[in-house]
Length: 351
Ligand code: ATP
Image (tube, rainbow, N blue to C red; front, side):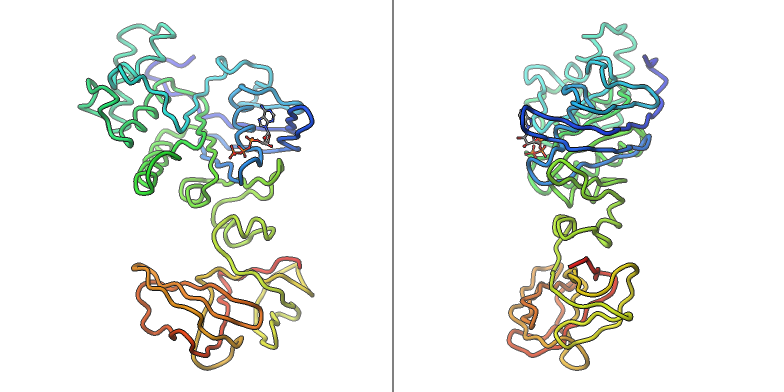
């Protein structure tokens, strides 16, 4: 195990042909996945898609029905949880309310009977890393939600895990705090370079913190990639719909043109032709009072402060758009417009 000064070497985590069945229920179908050393990977997907089950198998809390799990080169498939050098953070922080910050963080080291001096040094180091300096004597019950979250993180980090696991750690924080804490987690993870697996059903959270997002659907991986790739090049309607907002409608694609209800727009995409489903992100929907475009009528306009949302009725249905700021140039409700699709937010899927 690690000395108190030396950090653990970051390890990669590999899942090979992982299947998990609970009786007749197949929770995980056949998953191959590699978490590169030192990166933060998010498992994202709707309730019941199998993400928690994968996390629990990596933790050693569930045994795969088939397949292998490797940390570095080491096969840990049959290694019990307590020998895997992992720590897991949950939404309920499971802090000891009657203990102070120091005692909560030191607890794991005391249980494993590390020398007193080493415990003091390691706790001091992580207290500083997570920004809790000066609060060591404070009972955790007298901390804010964000501070408690940091104690939980410190308690994980002090164990110098090879792999850090997060099971929806932010679900009981309010929206503002969630955002702040997720940035803190990300900063710290990057600074320390600990291989991390993070489970969430919140796509924005996944995009914000991940090196790699693994989108799951019914026990299989639907798509994996960096957040930008998932957003701009979804492999399916499910992926497009789950990662961000999107309009979908039927069209036809050939010879470098999308054809939609009599309107034809130049567009380039490899490997697809004929009947297609057109995906257009709200920010890619452009409306003009004149010129070329799909015929539309503005249905509504809502000013939201930092952005203005609108919808427009077209022959292919009502489409949702968004522009930054107040957008006084945006046509008003009832106005007849021409609609175009900016290529950066447009993507074609097989119909
Ligand atoms: P959530 O976001 O709701 O936690 P999830 O994506 O994490 O969902 P899992 O908890 O991994 O999904 O569950 C995947 C499937 O396996 C579900 O159909 C679930 O009901 C089933 N399942 C999970 N654990 C067990 C178990 N111990 N016994 C039986 N079925 C289980």
